Amino acid sequence: MSSVVIRLSPLRWIPGLMVYFIFGIIAFIILRNELLKRKQSHVTFTTTWFKLLSITCIISCFLYEICGVIMFIPGFCVFSGYFISISFNIVVLAMGFYQLHRLYYCFANEKVHSDKGYSKWIFVIMIIIGVLIGVYSSIAILFVQYPGGHRVLNGKCAYNDKYEFEIYPFNYHLFGIKLSSLSYHAVRGCAFMIWDLCTLALYMVKIWGFKKYETEEPIVYKRIMSILHKIFILTIFYEVINVMNVIGNVFLRNPLHLLCLYQLFILSVCYSMYLMMDYNQKQYTKFLKMVYFLKLHWIFCCYWRYIIAEQLNELNEDKQQIANSIIMNKQQNNNNDDNDSCKFETRDVSIEQTMIKMPELSIATCIHS
Image 1: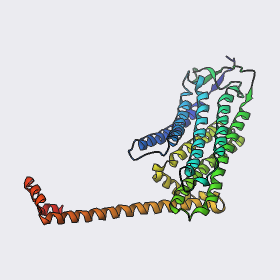
Image 2: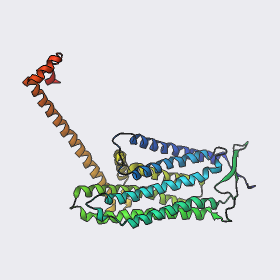
Image 3: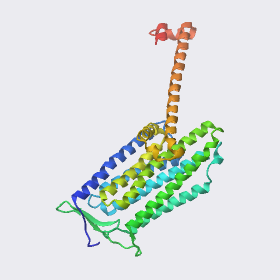
Image 4: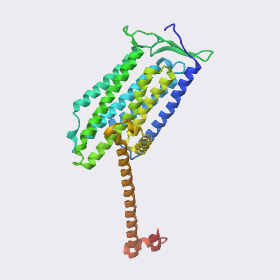
């Protein structure tokens, strides 16, 4: 254990605790709503991977916030820093793997357009790259030495008489390797961003190139393009926040400001995963309306800026079709009721026998019910 002691005054650790606590409540609400939706009988998943990757991302986001809260409890700071890093990696990796699986399944499952997708080797390479980034991020963090001289694992922590949070770093040495925190976070952040942008590029190429097949199978085309557009929009949403996070790490020096940017990025990934679920269409529509109202779609250029408007139009059309279907079903049920009332008026033998067994029901009652 090092003789160096890191002391956090109440003006530093209380705001940090409140940030983790507030964002933890938001993450809990997202997780709770997602679990309640999944308990409904009509909610199904096309593949098991869709179900596992999506819930893993949302749960890891909540665990990230929990680890941040317990970090300020004496004793838990020994390992909470490492689990915060692991939770961060799982959130980003689960999102990336979900996007790749979604892109692959859009074409692998459709017999009409199964030959229009990417080669399987592209997905294999992207998955291997994601796994390598995750392994590097999870292991290399153990070799990182922060400016105060401590590492991600601490010896012990406690509060003193002045309510300062004292951390006693545990300066272990693994194979004599030392990494600066700046280089580690820069490499990890750039690796995740480049990997995610490569996935986004795969979506952009497929959206742009798939338009020529619109006349072959309009229904299948519309369904596939709707999925591609949704993933594209939500990926841009949290990547914009990620860029803000990277810029903040360069220019900001206040730890609380940096913490808030990290929280916004993690929560944006979690919320994006929540909106990607097909049964959260209502929340996704509200999200698109908010983006359109704030004119945030103008950050795109050319064709891409109109994707949000197209998505809103498609969702409104689907909503209108559902409403028309409900009206038609209601009219059909009314017609069936009228036919049933006419059958009662015929007074055939079977109906009369039934009325004898149930004298409290009359013909007039059936007609006016």
